[in-house]
Amino acid sequence: MSDVLFVEYPKCSTCKRAKAWLDEHGVAYADRHIVEDNPTADELATWQARSGLPVRRFFNTSGRLYRERNVKALLDAGMSDAEAFALLAEDGMLVKRPIVVGEDFVLVGFRETEWEAALC
Image 1: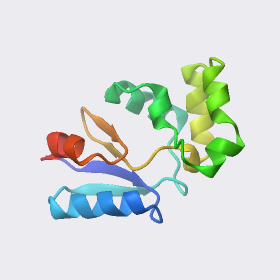
Image 2 (image 1 turned 120 degrees about the vertical axis):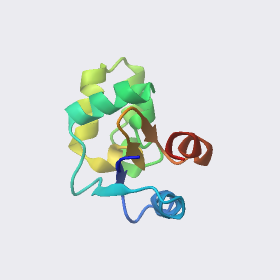
Image 3 (image 1 turned 135 degrees about the horizontal axis):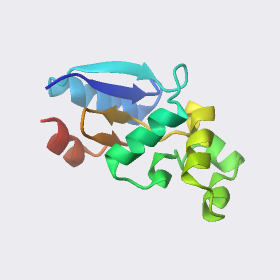
């Protein structure tokens, strides 16, 4: 299998567990810091389409910034996908992590069963 892109925030405990899981399972990956190298709106749109997930799943709903900017209300009010991707691209702390990007799949968050199915 070719390398996957592992998008993470290094201080995030879930990201640390996910990275350890990748290492334990011998999955080769390129590491990307979600704040220093935040995904662009175009990347996010591509990843969302490849993942088959709703745009909402790309938001870090437990983050401080999500609450401060009242993102749930914006989404509930009918924010378009393009507006959502633009907002996500403003700050990596708004983006759910970790994200694993493969050639034909994208995993958002760390669910071992999903990762096992896609990466092993």
